[in-house]
Structures are given as C-alpha cells and as structure tokens.
Length: 111
Ligand SMILES: [Zn+2]
Figure 1 (spheres, protein in one colour):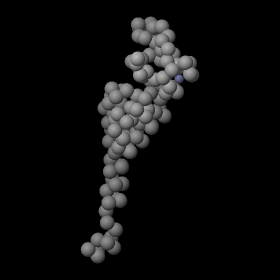
Figure 2: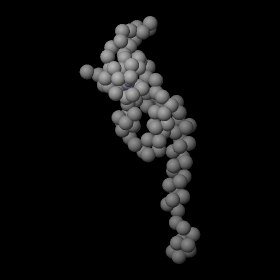
Figure 3: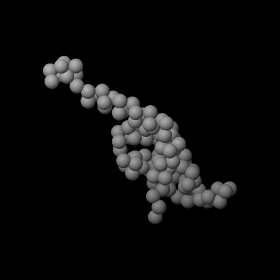
Figure 4: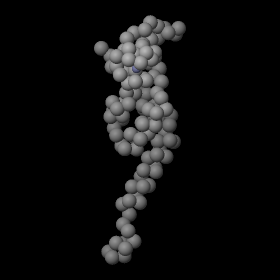
C-alpha cells in the first residue's frame, strides 16, 4: 500500500479516480471529495506557513513531513526554492537567541 494523503484534509482515505489527460494516476479523497494527482502535490499556503514555523522550531525535516504530510522530496525542493525566506527566518531566530544569551549590563560589570 502507498501512503497517499489527501492534500486538503490530510486523511489517507484515498481511492483511484482514473487518469489525467497527461496519463498520470488521479486520486479522489473519500472524505472531502478532493481530487489530486500523486506526483504534483499542491501544498496550501497554510501548510507552507506551518512548515516555516516548524523549521523555526528546528523540527527535523522528517518530522515536518510527518506533521504536514508533504513528501521529503517536496520539502527539500521547497526549502531550496525558498532558501532566502528560510534563511531570513532562521537568521531572525538566531539573532534573538544571541540577544537572549547576552549577559545583562549589570552582571557584566560585576564579573
Ligand atoms: Zn480529503
């Protein structure tokens, strides 16, 4: 069995639904009736936002795949295509961590 999940509701109650004009296997979700093609995942903006948050939280890539249902291939491609976005997010996080680590002026004077 495959591990297909509906790109809309994330459930895996999927049945085959014929082929597209391009000869790709088409699927339909039994829960929400969403039709989709296996190898052209459409990832919604809300999922992409969630992925950015999870990247910030330093969740492993496999963990992000597990949580959001995207494939590792897609995730790697997404990060590669959005490297400036993710770097900016990571950069902001690191800057905040640096500031948090910095001793307060009073403590520094004491030492
Ligand atoms: Zn669905």
